[in-house]
Image (cartoon, rainbow, N blue to C red; front, side):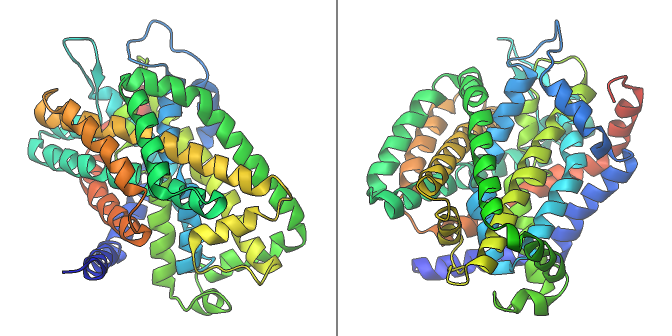
Length: 444
């Protein structure tokens, strides 16, 4: 079986997984928790305030903001830039609305994940805090076997969504913009990531706390500048996004021949890829936060989805669709090329700004996911194979920079969906616990 056949097989498997059953499960969980928790989205500004306020005398490995920054580092990556562009290129402009709705409703799911992560976390003999869906499955439901399945999927997925996808995006951009060979880019990324990963979660959190707010701010400013340049087309872009989300004719007019199912599938898949609400990854680092109250950390965790999707992905989608309308000569068949051409409309600094954004976003995602993968491996086998995992993870960064992008994206879509299933099951099964903790907390 050659590479093309393997890619075709994986793409078909991902397509089947992301059919209506998965869409119903994911959006259904988002909506169910939103209603059961009485719309935690209304507490988002209170949650933002808590994220920068220390929970005094609380146990944990990193501050609440450090845990949030690490979570954002893992989620604000190529999913926000290349992922949204790929959704638009394949699913049409309506995919932006599905992506945004997934994030808006996903705030409730991210809240629930964070709450269970702290409630069921454990403290090891050396004082390290460990938690996440595997501990909720084991300690909350007694489903050890499903916890093992989740960890196996997480460990494997870390090499896709958190590693090779990111290094490939960086190498592609560096080659297309500056002519830097992909192998050189991959080697530098592997060396730099290896140095940071050696310092564990505290080193990763320090890096992310310093760089995540800066890189997000610069990217948002760049998007706003492009929207100002395209101001005459922003309203038309909004209307097209809303119409084509539910009308295959609108989505196909001048973009791609698509269906509502395809539009929804790529929008929701890229939404999950971007904000990871329901995937079960972010709770792993939320469990390390210095906090006494599961609800407090749940609120802080929920802000990650707000910043990631409701703000950044929405701005990206508007930039891309308004640019397509404003500049009909832009090629929209390739997500990366579409994003690059849109940012080049900013004179002089557009291309460097996009390069900086993708490089820093993707590199921080590599670091954040290395922590997720390590905790999954530790759950499965203790600390025996952590060094082996780290070495393999760093090597994968290099190979991710030089392989075909379409294969990586299809593998990531497949693994994301598989990883989400056991986590969503735990959230639904423990919904009563989540609601009870929320009602009893003074922080909500």
